[in-house]
Length: 104
Image 1 (tube, rainbow, N blue to C red):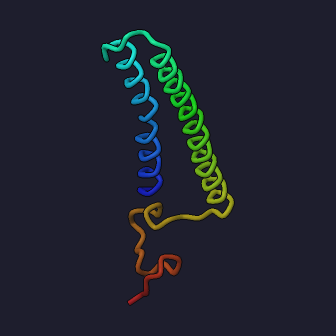
Image 2 (image 1 turned 45 degrees about the vertical axis):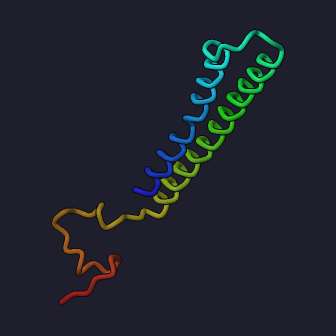
């Protein structure tokens, strides 16, 4: 589960590039002191295009991530897999053959 959480956080952190591109575009248009030229408009349009492109790409990859999680959950439910941490707190894992421990 830790790897799943870290992957999800990594995707979300990378997604910040969309906001970063928007900030750069705002700066270019409002605060850079550039005169209104066709070149500024051209660069701004490219940044808007990049922002849209990366938004779509991250939506797609996050949708894939969610699908993998759903499929893992369904497979686990179908196999009725239980993990050691899901057992009753009272159970002795050393005697559980599914856990790999040995009885004394």
